[in-house]
Image 1 (cartoon, rainbow, N blue to C red):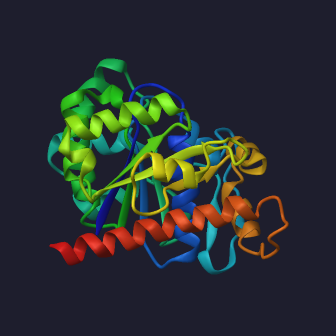
Image 2 (image 1 turned 135 degrees about the vertical axis):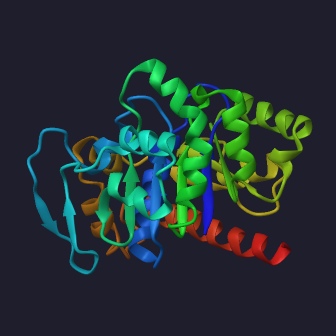
Length: 281
């Protein structure tokens, strides 16, 4: 059981949240893991919009092997989990009562806190413990880490994470800032850190090969390429259907081939690193 935390430095939009959605959805389809995606943001609907619509009445779609997908959110997300945590009644197996099921027994989402701002600030102090409990029930816990939860809470979650997916921009200045951070903070130079380029532009001169060399990485850096169909799907609550269609792509000339191939490589990099870290213990 492992915690994979997606983190980025500062407020720049680097595609962190959609990268989590893409990788978690792919892994749920292709691997036999029970996965939970946790949003630590405040009233952020980015993940919600990928999987279900707010006003849609209970609607089920057949997804074959993975069972029905309910496009209406039936739980209470962090709004339900936090009071249980505060009262000391939250057990690992109870977290699933407050999640949205995307693929039965494969993928669930714990949506962001939507209550009062002051209540959110108090709730963020419980997030590390909630993640720790979830890690005892799920095979993989993907955390969308928001820096607004406070430096101390961010550091606690990063330190307890099995893997940190440091999500970077394709801009050279952003890469330089991260290289400096690695020198100043040994955590970001540790084997538990994997680098990921979000919203990757394949036509930039900063190719994955060039970035990998510039960042002095031994292995090719992971990337989530920008994809028009995925971007549109993330606003239409159709990401599960899209990935099931992408699963059938074999033609390298298909314009979506690069996207799904890189998502596959990201997933494999995570699995390999988890295995490597386990062997180091």
